[in-house]
Amino acid sequence: MTTLTARPAAPSRRPSPLLRGVVRTPYYVLTGGLAILFLFPLVWTTVASVSPRAGTAQSEGYGFANYITLANYQAGIWTYVYNSTFVSLLTVVLTLLISGLGGYAFARFTFPGKDILFMVTLAILMVPYATLLIPLYVLLTRVGLQNSLVGVALVLTMFQLPFSIFMMRVSFESVPKELDEAALVDGCSTFAVLWRVLVPAVKPGLITVGLFAFLAAWNDFMAPLILINDSNRMTLPLAIANLRVQVQGIVDYGATEAGVVILALPCCILFLLLQRHYVRGFMSGALKG
Amino acid sequence: MIARLPGARQRPATATLLPHQKGSTMSAPTAAIRAGARSRTPGASRASRRNSWRGAGYALPNAMFVIGLFVLPLLLVLQMSASKWPLLSGNQGWNFPTNYTKAFTHRLFADSVVFTLKYTMLATVLLILIGLGLGLLVQESSRWKGFLRTSILLPSALGLASASLLFYVLYSPIAGPFAETMQQFGFSFLGTPTMALLSTTFLIVWRYAGFYMLLMLVGLQGIPTDVFEAARTDGASVWQTFRHITLPLLKPTLALTTVMCVTGSLLAFEQFYILTKGGPDNSTITVVQLIYSVAFQGQNDLGVAGALSVIALVALVVINAVQLRAFAKDKDE
Image 1 (cartoon, chains in turn red, brown):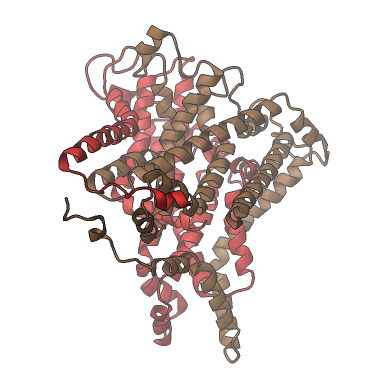
Image 2 (cartoon, helix red, strand yellow; image 1 turned 90 degrees about the vertical axis):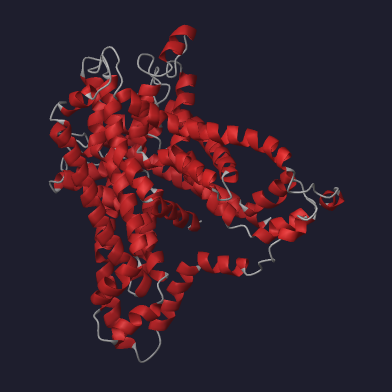
């Protein structure tokens, strides 16, 4: 590109304060507008869920009547909160266990079938969700785990494995080998090395994996939609989605807003608390390419 | 002003950035190779064999999950797609290729494929462009940009189902914040096929823009700063720098994000299931929605649903292979 060098020298990068102000104002207007655009739906829904509206439980004044409607909905909102919490926690525990042990195996050992197992685990990402859920419905029926929250947690754990195994393998590999070799020479068993030496070292990786497993399980819609038919065993997203169609085609928007707030609240809190780990999870995803 | 000459703040050229970067992306395979080479050294064979059993033991739970919940279902869906398999009465024996013929001639098959492709194209172009734009906008770190990043990223912590329910209320002609405006001007967010597609895409952009912004940011931070310094001293304009330096060096990131976005969009389900229920007039039915409705809503035919799933899987693999090849070819040139 000859034009690159033929151009006159670039203008000074540090213009006067006045000029900077003129340049900066549209920037702040644009970016401020963007921030509002992304936050508005969440803020509006939260405010609307406690605001008065005709046709909802909260018809006059501000208050939590919509949440009370929700609390008394069918089996009671607490049943669904409990179901979702159970599925999410079981998924987190299973994911941490399997990817903790598996990541250690992939990072520190050689064993027959290692590369194939790793490739097949990553291949889960390539297969459509629905392609697996329909045969899983049949398989879980055969072993008595269809229409069961444990079955849903097992399926959700499987879908977390590509990311979690990859993440934990990279985490273990970034710990210097000398650390566990020294402990092995001192006579520790490999499990003691893993538990006492390596787990503290890969804690950030475990937090990221656990956070992603929780968010995925808490929010999942399709697995419980296909695998659960008992309304008492529905998870929260399913129950809130059903809320809309239940009452003779009339949608209770107030209760739906309250439901969305209850669904979103734990996710937003966890995200704000663990943002660093959340961002790191994405980074490791990007490194894959 | 004169004191602050462009060159004064110039950082020393960081030639070490490149090899370091290479090392970090290649760490996984090289470490595996190193480990493999070590175990083959003579003298340590008995210890390494014992070690290899331990390793296999630690990987066993992973192997059990992958075999039981991934490989087995994958084989089963192949069998289902070639068998008469009603939802309630189970396997009734082979009938290949009846299910595939039924799948291809399903009255909504062509429509759902066309709609899914249309949606995928729209969502991918928008998300890649917006993600890149946002990534460039919040690139350097400052307190304001940190706040911006957090606000843009926050929706991605929500589930797709929660986000869809949220927009279901926002788009409502009765309860939404635009209800009065909608009545006044007589438009609706989900009433016509085009509006339904655009409104759903807006929801997806809102939910995923932060995700793609972050991926772009990672890619942008991987570009060594001395390249930009060199361009600046050569007097390149902002646009020239972007067009001839940022974009080519960002190609791996663009390839990754495009493949991810295309895959995600081709498998769209929740947003349409909750927001439009496939309407108006079945105009927003995606392939995955078709699979779900054939299997569990009315027809209850797991055989045809299985055939549709296999077709979707093959299509996805082919589309991804074509994309990866196109990007790899592009890289060679």
